[in-house]
Structures are given as structure tokens and as C-alpha cells.
Length: 440
Ligand code: 5AD
Ligand code: SF4
Image 1 (cartoon, rainbow, N blue to C red):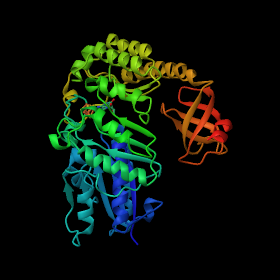
Image 2: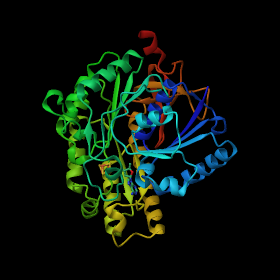
Image 3: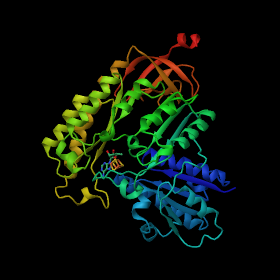
Image 4: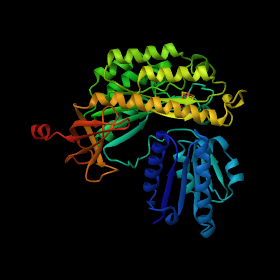
């Protein structure tokens, strides 16, 4: 039996694509290898959001090159956004690579692997969805569903529009049927994925039209789905209907990831984000009005070209004011072919790093303060398995997307009630409420 090994870089989209790739390979009769050395097919699912991903990736590719020279019949494939952004250049730079494919190109990879004459190196443009292929899920009670691909925004720092193309939504009926199948397989928590989930459906024709809020309601109605999450919405498209859904739909979790990028309206303008600081804060106020206990997380970029000290201080101030429950912070890095890479006034590396440190301090302090509100409460936790730091304890996630380490008896995939006794910026601690367990 042939064996495969997949290394995944980057975002949840890529994790999702890799699951599809694994599902496809297993349906083609491949088995997963524990180590790259043991694999006949070595795949990399790449990301180009951050420059250092490229460097890390180059080191991994060096390993694949050595393995290929030991056994030239091994196949080395490179997929994902980075592959898409450099295309045939992959083969010029890394001649031992056999196949390169864009994001979501799982079907084409399958065709490549099943054709009996692998003579020439091939690159496949992306098209179509991965949604129809069987997925191999990492956790049987959690599933991911890609609701759209591509993005119609033109954020000036972002490589996605050029690598993933224009936004295309999958028909709502098809998505509902997919989630019903997942629920029948034992999935309790589903995460809906898209570059801009709340513009979902605008490209669909009347017969299968649904807004994102309507799609959420249809998925909420599916028997067996206890938790719905989604990532990421765009602040410009965050409307009241989706916000209200968080208080109206019992499965929709009390957590919204709302990427900010910058707290300065002039930086936001040059980022082409199409909202201002005020409009963003207005969305936050609307969320807090309808879902007071909602956890809020975000993405912030420090050191965008032309970002002045005053601009950056506006970001710090906003982070202080909002009080995020968590955030992903990035130092701006120029991406090939993006508008921002050509802007004058690139911020020196040392300044970016210093700003990032100041930002992380505010984010963590506020997250810790926010987490304190959970101490003394009993939260519903989806058990994931043993705690990473102490295997005698369990680890799971609250509806607010907080990692909870706790003592208890719950099995992976089970929903348990946990009394929260402590909080840090990243995690909560507690013990399973046996009282509730006895009562259920
Ligand atoms: N530099 C730094 N961060 C970036 N992101 C996207 N492109 C860049 C870039 N060129 C960040 C954004 C986005 C997250 C997924 O990655 O914050 O929301
Ligand atoms: Fe990139 Fe902006 Fe689209 Fe997000 S919304 S994928 S940052 S272009």
C-alpha cells in the first residue's frame, strides 16, 4: 500500500483543504505515513500570508529533496496559496517537485495521481470546490465546512484576492445537506469557513439564495449540531441580522472574530478596508448591545507602510477600549504582487517589532481582565482530550472559544459543565461539575 505524508502551513482554510486531500488520498487507497521518510507521496500545503512561512517551508522542502534523491520514485507535491502565487516558478526553483497545485485543487491532484503517465511536471490552476470529496476529520466530533472560496475585497496587504480569485458561494441547500451528513457521522461542532463569510450568498441566484444569517439559521435547525462557529467576517459586512443570530440561535457560539487590522482610519484607508475606526467601534457596540457576554477576538497588523507613532497609538487605544478576549497580531510583511508592497514609507523592522511588543502587552492584559469574568461561573465545555501540560487533567473549549483545563471524567466529544476557578489571558482552569453530570 502506498503511503502519504502531508505538512500543512497557515490558516484554517489550509487545514480544511488538507483534510480533503487526506480523504481523497485514502479513497484512492493511500494510507497515512507517520513520518515523511516513510512516505511515497510527500505533500506540502502552503500559505503565503506571512513571509516567515516561506522560510520555514524552504527548510522542509530541503528535507523532501534529500528524500527524493534517495528514492527518485517518490512524488513531491506542493499545493496552496504560496504555490498559486509563484506557479511554474516552483519548478524552476525546486526542480525535484513533481506537481504543484493551487488552493482547493484536490480534484486535479487526484487526476494527476491516477493518470498512469506521470511524465511532466504539472501545475494546476485552482477552480472548483473541495467540498464534494470525503474528508478525513482530525476530530470526529468537529467538522469544518467551506461555504465560499475567494474574496472580492482588495485589502492592499493581502495576497488572497490574487491567489483565491473572486468570491464564489456554495449553494445553501448543498451546505445544509453536507452539515446533515456530518451530524449523522457524530459531528457536534461545525466551523463555517470563508475569507469573508458574511458576504456569503450575494453571488447566488434566486433558486438557492440565502444570506449568511439565513444559512446560520438553517444549520442551527439541524439535529445533533450543538455548536456553530465561523471565520472570518469582515467588519464592513457585519450586519445586525448576523449579530442578532448569536442571541437567537441556540447553537451559534458567543464568540465573534472581527478582524480590525488597524485602529487608525487613515491606515485603514490605505489598507483599503473600507471602514473607519468609528464604524468598527459601532459594530462592537452593536455586538455588546445584543450579545453582552460575547467573546471578541481580532487580527491586527503592526507596522503597515506609513503607519506613524500616532496611528499606532490609535490602535493601542482601540484595543484598550474594546478589551478583546484574544487576538492574532502580525508584523506587516510585504507580499509579492500586492499594492502595499509598492508603497513608500515601509516601516523599519525594529520599529515593527517594538510596536508588536507593545500591542501584545495590551492585548494580553485586557484578555486576562476579560477572562476574570468567567471565574465563579459554570461553563459548557466540549472535551477535546487530555490537557497538554498535565495529562491527568482534561482540555476542552468553552462556547466563548476559551481553552479550559480541568479535572473531570468527560470523554472527548462530550459536552460537560465545568466550574471555573482560575483564568489567565489564554486559558481557564476548573473542575467538572459532578452535580450537573448526575442531574443529566
Ligand atoms: N502582513 C502581515 N499580516 C498579514 N495578514 C494578512 N496579510 C498580511 C501581511 N501582508 C494578517 C491579517 C489577516 C490575517 C489572516 O493575516 O491580519 O487578517
Ligand atoms: Fe484578504 Fe481582505 Fe479578502 Fe481578508 S477580506 S482575504 S484580508 S482581501
